[in-house]
Image 1: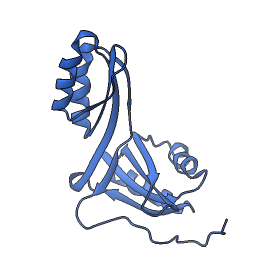
Image 2: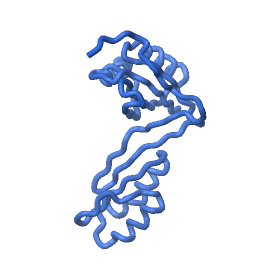
Image 3: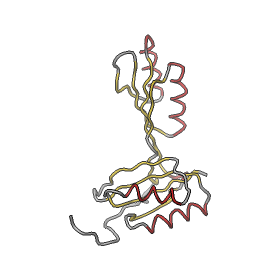
Image 4: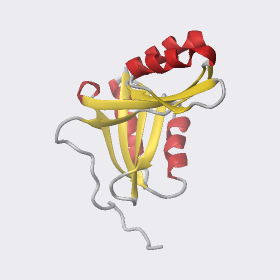
Length: 172
């Protein structure tokens, strides 16, 4: 079953490699990975999705918590989390430019580049919505596509916020 892990880490060089290395060394596959700074610039938040059972996900969390750069780890409940990905999709437009623009509106996709004979769209949403957009655009000819990793936050008042590091770090 798909599991979503939120990890708050120190925002410093090498942290992504250490976290990804932990998954690799233990033979766990990362299905999706997204990283970005938090409201406090000294911390970043990683959102990792993986297919795992309950025992495996508990083991992953224990191993993550052992890493010095990791400040907090939480498995997000799939049914009570807001989840989104983003996609950039370049489609051959030719004479169908207006038709493609109207079709994109259905998915709340926006054109971000209209040069030449192609259109580039950006869309955000859950995996099902983005898959449906891809299927609708395929007959027109997808020239290029890239999709971000999933980002997620737990719904409600619960938050994974770190105010200060659990360790003393030397000042730079």
